[in-house]
Length: 420
Length: 119
Image (cartoon, rainbow over all chains, first blue to last red; front, side):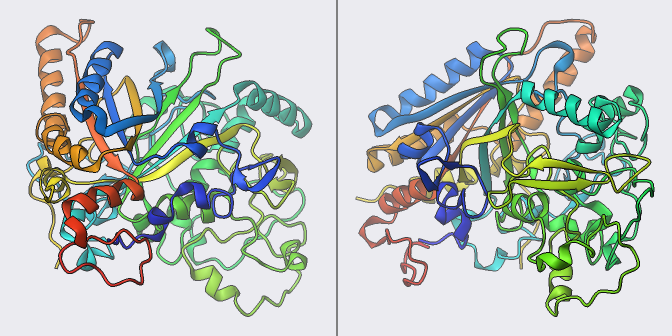
């Protein structure tokens, strides 16, 4: 049997250290520092049950488990919950989550309202999410049971809220800007969800709540999709949204070569995560974080590319000597450089290619650098640099796996057609 | 040539549109210990308990109608719940083993020729 997807078939655990740069166990540099259940238990599948209250979810879950009887054993169980009250829709650092989501085009029998595409959201072909549909590059070779299925990436991401908040307060003090502004520049949005491209100086909750405006922007400067370099001098103002900001790393929009947004579309994912753990004021010592989940038809084009190349890629393997003067935020603007012969290839491949824009402070991580410099955070001096730890101290992977979510017809047919 | 989907009841409910409606969600990761028994149960569960996109659409339309009737200030909520199931590669291999009989390949070596019956 083959799914044609080596990332799926290898599994997340085997590639967590080498490809995703998850932190390693102190006594075993090949093994990710995950929870024991994720390392030791055989995970063959996941049943996810969602609803609007605990009782009904619990009842449904146990109904299904009872159907499977002794054919399955629990490997592990995790409960997630949307945060209460005014925090609804926010992750535990307090930022509104899930605003930018692509719209899967040409779905049948929807009302006009259900087909609505908010300004600034991208319409993607069905095959970016569903195997075997137009836009899935592997459509012609998919076995029949894969049609209308999708790959699910699940990651348990612990969030250390106190460490994040302390880091933002301390770093903003060093840089001479307010903590809220530094947080917004690291994320690319204010806590409300208002994009800093629309409001560089202050949060604006009206924009955040307005679906017609909260995703309707381009990164500045425009045209980076065809730019070969981008240099700044000391004292030069920063662009409105730093190139290392979380939302710019995870969705480069117009920055992506060769065609900007059109070139990003095949890499889009549908995010379905939910927070876990209690509120800080309920139990500050408890564990909390995000149960990250996303769907795509091809893990190598979706989650893995975003995490490995866009979020965490630091230097595109440029020789270190070139990494200093050439990259995006450099205090040497006019020096002529001879680029390595393979640079053009790298510049055109589907990765975010401006080195030294820093590490995504929320989900970026590297095992190979103790600290990573990030410029462009101080509005009136782009050259000021903040050093963030290569091993992410704020968002810590605790486990995860790649799954395939088959279609209903496959589940009822080929995948349950028990022989002899 | 691939064509666009025409039946939203073929896709599990958390994938398209806005996914399953969720305020709480439980992820129950499992090990398959008896593949044959699991296969039989999977068909029942898929027929009766797994949500698809059309379910989710119907639920959202129902909620909208309910709110319009009761008024938005009304705090009562319609109970909603949905379930999806997904497999890791090891789980898929177990499922394919029993659904393809003895001809199914259990190797993860992609270079081995695909089974004539089961891909």
